[in-house]
Length: 148
Image (tube, rainbow, N blue to C red; front, side):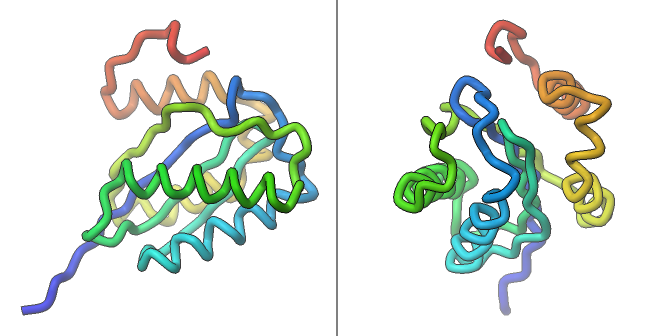
């Protein structure tokens, strides 16, 4: 029998100290790089987007990969790419942590649209408000002092 999976994660992480350093003019290059990285790991990227201080990734994760290892690879490889290409001059790395929320295939289209429309969304809601709402929605206990 073959192996069939549908393992979708909504991954969110931010720049170190949430510094707004991801320039609009170069974000597409970063996102294309992340897309290629995920493709090389047999993952399917549904959508990637973000703001100056954080990114969202909606992806199918290949069953041979752990979420933590994949995110570590994304952060390390993209940091190297950013520094090598010099696309974000004030980039000083990614935050230490991340969030990864398992998602239903039925939520895929809604989440793809949500990620696609980040610019509109963040005209109304700050990243901190958004992030706290995610943690509450997914019933994740957290200490607010670590959200800063």
